[in-house]
Image (cartoon, rainbow, N blue to C red; front, side, top):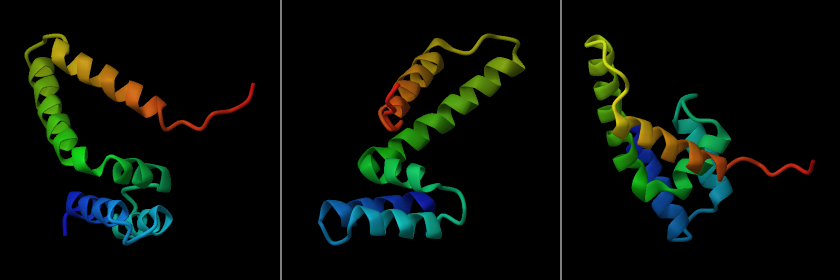
Length: 99
């Protein structure tokens, strides 16, 4: 089974309360073969219904960036916007620390 299929499987199981988030994270980390950390697994399970589309967008953005680099052009604006959006979303998963 492809990783995206595993992500969707465990995400659905958590949403249906067939599995706890902790059990799903542990199972996904194991089945990912080292491709996901517990934090990464928790993130993709929490947002499982959007993950396939995000990975497709990432693939398309990568192609666009490589094409631009090959042609000596700057990173396309839509790719920059996607990177900013992704960075903003990642901040939501950072642990809060007291300063």
